Image (tube, rainbow, N blue to C red):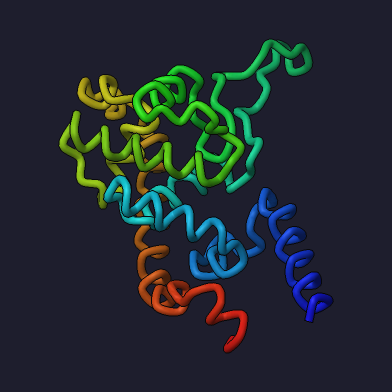
Length: 204
């Protein structure tokens, strides 16, 4: 019996060690959460805390980092070969900028939070979408305009800076389409995902 539980424990540790890798099937929200049960637990916790449906920040996160825990904006170069730095200090799963992340830490008191931790990153996105709703009245279900706020900031969105950026409007449209696909997929697998870990362990 002890040997069997040791194998289970080692398996859990192994899975946790690989949890920072991008999901194998990022186009399907069900497959993402089936592969990464800890991500689903974190997404559900975010939903309960901030009221943002899980498919919205997941679609935004895909656009921002492709679910890479240490993602950064690409390096910029002069004359094609002299590095001059990155476009911004955005970092991690959510590509949160340092100043905005610091505001999140101050407001929530989550001093140990890290931009490279999925649970912290999606909680940050829940906080941001909730603030967007409070400040600019954008529904937490509106992935398109939530993303525009995320990219331009609350003041920029209010000023309409995104209207001058057709490329950004197109990107926001893609985020909205992905969010709707994720929502449809999630509706098909939510009951299965909500089964407890013990039920899945003993009964499949």
